[in-house]
Image: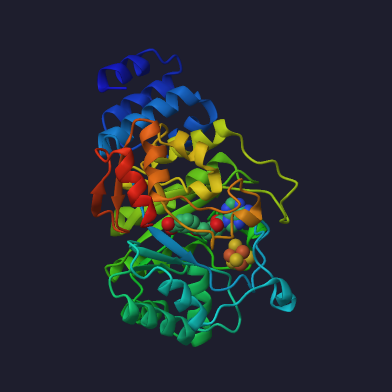
Amino acid sequence: MNSAAIKVLVDAELDPQLQSIGYKILNKERINFDEGVALFEKASLSYVGALANWVREEKHGNKTYFNRNFHIEPTNVCVFSCAFCSYSRLYSNREEGWELSIDQMMHIVKSYDGKPVTEVHIVGGVHPKMNMEFFLELLRTIKAHRPALHIKAFTPVELDYMFKKAKVSVAEGMRLAHEAGLDSLPGGGAEIFHPDIRKQICDDKVDAVGWLNIHETAHQLGMHSNATLLYGHIESFSHRIDHMERLRSLQDKTGGFNTFIPLKFRNQDNDMSHIKESTIVEDMKMYAVSRIYMDNFPHIKAYWPMLGRKNAQLTLSFGVNDIDGTIDDSTKIYAMAGSEEQTPTMSTADLVRLIKQVKRQPVERGTLYNEIRDYSLVDATGLELDSQTN
Ligand code: V47
Ligand code: SF4
């Protein structure tokens, strides 16, 4: 929808508050806390969706980014017990857990030798015996083997635990990790920052202040990072906006965040299985409000292994301009939580096709959104050839 058409839509809105929010968005003014909540509570999906799509097109046109990455999950053994987690196993239940050695992880890294991946994403449980020195050694070994591979690794949950155990400050720990090869931080571990919810779903791990401090420290070192929000469980709309507000404020200060990633709560095999999952309408509204509220975040990402590829495709009309990457089947966290994507793997050809089907422009990016290749003019034969190299 172009600017003239969207103005007609806003002019026709009957609710005065929603209409004034619409004008603010069209004037590129920031909406406030109450207005964010009002969008969730009162706006129709078509209204909020059209506004979010307009914002997305103003920022990125039709461009839809993806990258070529692979995941390593060092362990699913975890000292914490988040109620929503279907993936972790306690140290006392290690027969159901895995723990990879550096050699085993390097075997995964080496299996991508000669392939055009640009990023490795490393996140896992918090294993009581895998310490900071182990992870620094892992970073150094990967960098020595493939210096150009971008290492996006470790959430503040893992980092906070390893720093405390190693008795180093956050500033010192982050400096050492960066020096060893850590290039950026993924967005995990954020969940819902508000203590009323956090204490019910993940009481024992790093709190909001600790999470934000680790990202701020990374930004001060010149590193970039992502941020997530786990939605669709016991949180209210105000809790979601509170979470986004805290991230938006830090972003005003540092400018270090690249991408905001709303994560849909999946309810299989965890302590919150009694909670019904959000509907597709609620999902699309979450993405749309995120695009509008997070005005200083350049990108909004839908993580397709968790949403499913068809729903991820739909988000591209509700504010999303990134659908992550080609990931392979080593990603277990969502399969174990009930995602329809039991073996999440998509080739570049699949991703490009998915983006083109909704008339968007597929662009391969690096982790920091440097554009690697525009696929809009690549024909089907080219795509198939490409997929063989992936
Ligand atoms: O923090 C765990 C979530 C996150 C469930 O930065 C669940 O590029 C839904 O953060 N239902 C880890 N979600 C994954 C993550 C991520 C993924 C992809 C890309 C990036 C990035 C980051 O997974 C955890 C938690 O919020 N999670 N269990 C569940 N049952
Ligand atoms: Fe551990 Fe992360 Fe699962 Fe929480 S979400 S139990 S920190 S693996």
